[in-house]
Image (cartoon, rainbow, N blue to C red; front, side, top):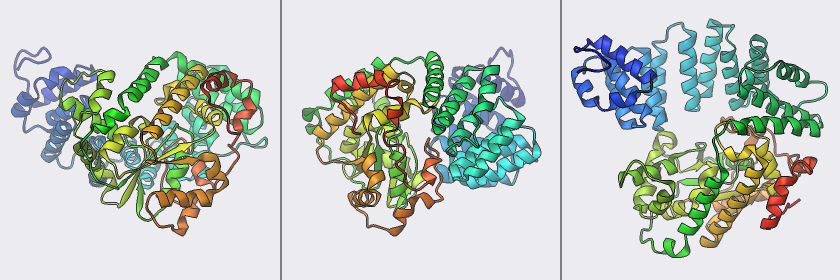
Length: 534
């Protein structure tokens, strides 16, 4: 084989090195085209087998990635790198239980290395085993006490676990070591309500004035300052920082809101009463999933925590599985390259029973055999029609909130990789109108199929609304549902700090502090017939 410029067949160690170089250079296609040949010629070399697996996972060919990761580990059973890589592959396919088993085996082969402790901890975070993650981040810190990143990772883990005081202390320690650990400012600001006696505004303004080495540092500092200034009642200053941070983030995004608006229009036009009635399949009759949908920052996590406190329900977070299974099945029917417009039309031609069954099966590594599980991916509001066709017995809960409060809450949240429409008031207003139209369409198309929850009513009449939620899900009331905030189940959403508190009403009408600054959104919503509820 003449690969990477070698004139003769390299030995196995040389080939493993060459494959790793190709992967680092982004030349994965060279490996993918020769997988069978490589696998056959180097079947007894764990390094080559793992390199093939790494190439496959980059190509999102997860079955192949797992196959060669398992072979690599079979050849070198006590190699920590092989174990951690296999765990990564299993996590990518939502096989969390197997990943956890693999990580516990890896613990037996750890060197006294901060890098290995940190890697192991980060993988435990990805399968929601935060207690074990914290344990190994602490070991990484003991091994490498001047590394601020280990402390920040521990702080983030504590936040997921609800250990908010410990998280703040870890942030303080991280920033003392490295004032450029910018994300620590962001999560620290959100851990509690800041006070005039105890806040970090002056510290962060000093760092911001000194300049940041990358634009995301400026964005994070601005969002953190906006949060702390709002807590202090400095509303104009808060919004000025918020607008600055959002503008910088927007400048570095390649995003056009019109494409999202076109997609929503396409979904509305494609999922007509006639096209949905024409589907002959009765779907897959599983009542396991409870989908919670809605715009971000509307209270979806609060609803999840209430229902997830039930003994017969397991919360599994924001799963991308439904869209992934839909996309996989569409690609199996044709080309790997399919336009978004064609994807919407093709979704109605799928075997609905198979789609529902594939979705449920894809969650097994996370959900196990629980009676019900919660899939809280807000964006699934795009898929409500298809969910109904594939899983007609599934429960769908839509959480709504005052439109202006929703838009403000979205605008002030730094999602980083998600919701790119959130960094411009114009984009945000236009997207919200399209979302509103889509939800109206689903209600018209599928009357009575969704349970509507008003955030304002939920925080005002919590017991009544909680009982309605439980009744809709076909469950019996349990007393611990009233104490959902005491649950030790981790939360990894943007609301990770807030869900540790009893229900509060202080976020209702908060947009009114910024009435003038948010006027561009109001001027988009009002002509569409969308007004404030407050």
